[in-house]
Length: 224
Image (cartoon, rainbow, N blue to C red; front, side, top):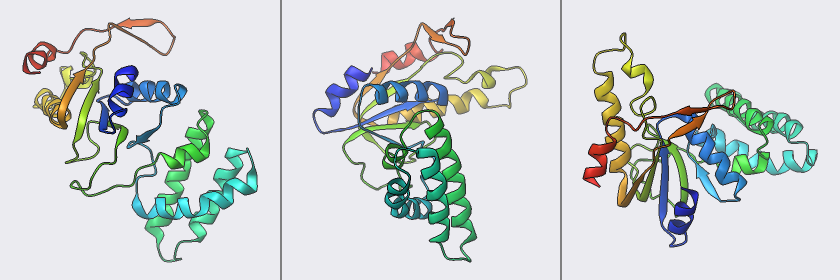
């Protein structure tokens, strides 16, 4: 998948890599990070415009003051960013604190603080242009946005449709909603659509878990 994405990006186009499950998106995002690929992470926590503006404005000072200690830099960053807000702007202050809490999780997982901030994409109107490059997002982000090329990762039972929608106690219409999510993901593609399905995926214990193609795999294959 990453080799295909790299070949597409070489033509200076927009590539949306979309997954229904956060775990699957996280796995391919980590692989891209390990491969040294540059990408925009739409699911990153710093997507609120006002909070991101304050955080980016204070990031350089926080990083310089703490050297390679990203955990300490995140603490300083939160203090500086919150202080830079108007005292009566409670909403933005709360958003900054929430974003910094997520940044701490990213830093603890091994992502450099500067890189995490750089990859954050602020919310934009649905008709705002998407800059060239790789974009990671889930099925519910970026409403109205399209990409030259789209890669849907994990078209498998239990992922699309999500296993919760298949349970006996699931709300009426849950399966139909899952199908609509798939249609939305696929309709984002302007020029090409690549859909992937894994035979096995590792679970928390490290053992591979068999996967079956989604019930809509054959139908989508016929369409594309």
